[in-house]
Structure formats: C-alpha cells, structure tokens
Image (cartoon, rainbow, N blue to C red; front, side, top):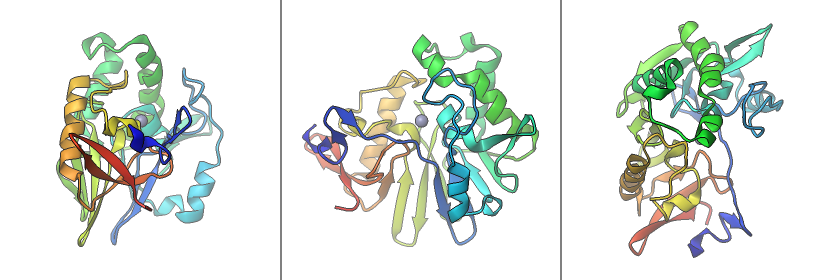
Length: 261
Ligand SMILES: [Zn+2]
C-alpha cells in the first residue's frame, strides 16, 4: 500500500493515537470517547496508572462543567477511561454535569462478560489482557451507571440535532460511529472500525480485540462504500496526525487522502 507513505507510515512505524474528541454543536458540547484516563490499574503497561495533564489541557479549551454530553463509541478501556477519575478514594464521574450515552446492547454485552466471560465470544489471552474487561467495568462504567448519568441510546438515531450514531458492529456488538452534520458539511468519527490506516486498504485485517472479525470486515466495507469519494471528513479515533481524512476508491480497494492536502 504505497499510499500509506509518507502521510501515515514513517519507516516501519504507523502513526497511531488515542483521541478524545470535543464536538461543539449550537446546542451541546460533547466529548466523544474519553481516552485511557489516569490512575487506572491495567494489565498493559501502555495504559497502566497513567498520570497525564489531559484534564488541564481540556479545561483550557472547554471547562469540564460545560460538557453536557459524553458519547462512547464502545466500552473498551481506551474509550471510557476518563469517564471517571479517582477522587477521595473512589471513582467518580469526570463530567458530573453531562449525560453519558451508552448503547444498551454494548452495555449488556460487557455486563454479561463480567459475570461470565465464557458466555461471550472467546478472546485470545492477548485480547483478554488488552481488554481488561473486569477492571474497566468496575472503575469506568459501573460508577457512571450508579450515578444515574447514563442515557441508554440505540444506534441509527440522532442523539442531538446534527449528531447521529451509526451502527458499526464487529469490533464490539454495540459499536457505533458518530456522524456529524452541519448544513452541507459532514464528518464521521469512525471509532474502532479502523485501528490503523492500513485497514482502509486491507478490510480483512482484524485485531484480536474484535468480538466478531468477519462482521468487523463487513462493517469496514459498508463504511468505506458509504463515504468513499464524498466530501465527508473521516476522523479516525486511532489515527495519528493527519487524523482527518477523506476516503477515495483505489482500483478495487480504498485509500485515505489527508484532509489538509
Ligand atoms: Zn480503541
């Protein structure tokens, strides 16, 4: 895939990131996915007990008490971490004035997983460690439910004017992407439909954390067919700079075009 170089691939490394995205509409300030969070005990070193200045930097552009909605594309650890923060010995909502939008089927899946992992899709040991499902549920999901801050939502609905959840299952059962529309302009936050830019050209490449790899590949095909050769900006939740891209057909496949080019 020659198109990966140089925008997305530097040497043998591909440029990835973990984004929490702030969206301002005329009526709402929305954080879409919350990142890894601080002080979370995780099996992966990459995510374990982070101590970053994320909240201070967010406060510079949008004070937390002005955030009135949080949307989680799915309930994996790198998307729900800053749902909560550790204060006075317990996990409390980071955005106490916000409503948190959880897809009901996604929550039900993780509840089932926590109660009996054997009853849901069988993950590899690597994936189990990466997901860290029990800890994530305990410190980042349950406290939001217990605080009564959840709005249970269904895919393929507009949650506020101009913001629509698009069902994109396969990485997880209730996974959604987020379509943003303003007049003639549109953008879509892909979530984990793609983990790396390379999957735009190789739809069949799955990650071990996919709950249903075949469905994930089919979701990528549907997503790419829908947005290819359109003016919809695609914001990759795990795409490093350039995070904003357009999708273009590339013979019998697809490729990305950086938005700034
Ligand atoms: Zn992710």
